[in-house]
Image 1 (cartoon, rainbow, N blue to C red):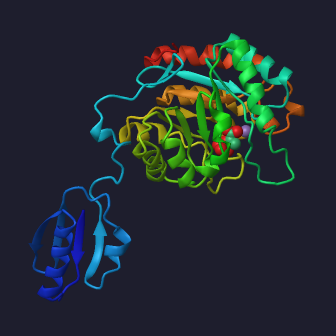
Image 2 (image 1 turned 90 degrees about the horizontal axis):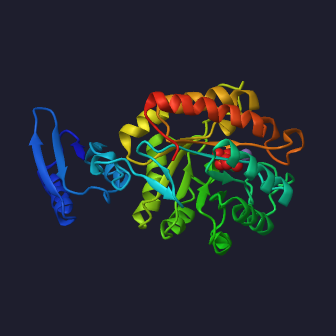
Image 3 (image 1 turned 135 degrees about the vertical axis):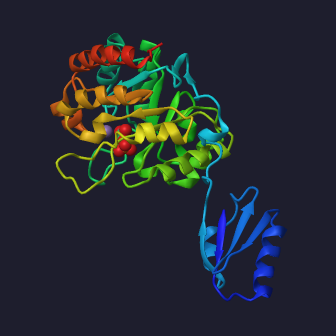
Length: 337
Ligand code: PEP
Ligand code: MN
């Protein structure tokens, strides 16, 4: 970290600041230029409050030269992380597809769709029991009953389940859930992140609607700092000035994240587009750009879906996408195993 000191700062004040940094366990390299004095802080600066330092009278500006995340940082990890979900591996060449409806609606619906997507090659299923809806008058999910039905579909198909946690108090219901999803709207719910950081369970962390990749990694850092290293990142489209799609899929986030972190990255083309016909091309793009997996919403009766019907694809469309994705995976040297 570099601290640029204002011109004409008195030596005494500069000394007070350097002494303070030293008392925090940091080394300080002082460089007196013709016009400026610059302090180079040496050591672990993670706990240094940039806003506090920037606000000091004698400080012109503060600049980080290393990233504020450590556990999630590629620099400190030689290998890509592989997250193993009951035998289904994600990351480092292992690709997985998570598929299922936006919301669990009934026993027949979730068990039927789970069997269909399994047949088409998905190894994990999804389904929301607790739903984050924009309107309080929209369907909020079957809640406890939804979790029960997911577990029943898991018993029938053997597929691990991915479902969203919105409130720490619901955690006891999630004991047999295989992957906890933290939704886009909760990406910066830090208490929730800390709570899942204490678990020994994979977490699928979705990027917020208006969050930078660094913010996404800082949220992953919250989970990992608590001891839970099993984090899967998910790009699901962000808000831009474009209104033609529900969101704009930030496809370049994948290669950029691959450079920044060793964590696996999954793409959700369903929420990104908001339109069923766009799920296929975006899925192929995701596989081609280097994603480690996909999360796709599949429904057996999209026009009657209680949530996100317009972006849901039918099981037969899903099977077609799987066949094409597998061809792209051959080219990029990944496999579903
Ligand atoms: C979902 O996966 O059903 C969901 C609500 O996603 P997001 O948090 O990305 O909107
Ligand atoms: Mn949805």
